[in-house]
Image (cartoon, rainbow, N blue to C red):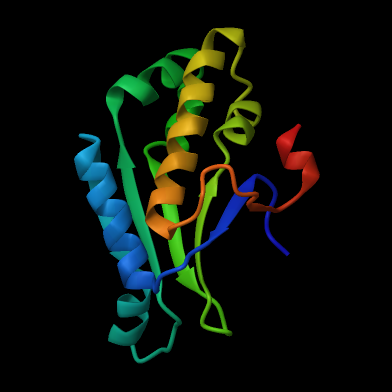
Length: 148
């Protein structure tokens, strides 16, 4: 079961290729990649096994600043993070926080609606490009409540 507010997109590619495709798409869009965290490599360094699990942290001040102007606490969830991971069946997934859920979590008002809508469209398009899926394709959500 997924946590509330998460969006899962199944990738047509392996974990490394999915992250690399996402990173290339971000570069093409002029976004800043702040970090690439390889949790599996960290686990291996201490003698533990972990299926491929990598986080890419990225953003753009033009997109995030209006949200932080509305509620500074959203800075806890920005910049945007995506998790690319492989499950026990060797299926690769890209998971991210639904920006609309983040807006509710941080009680953003109507002044942030346009920025949240733009971020939602942008993250969905990035996920589609990285995973080789259609933007219109239905993604697996944690809960129908997360869309409220």
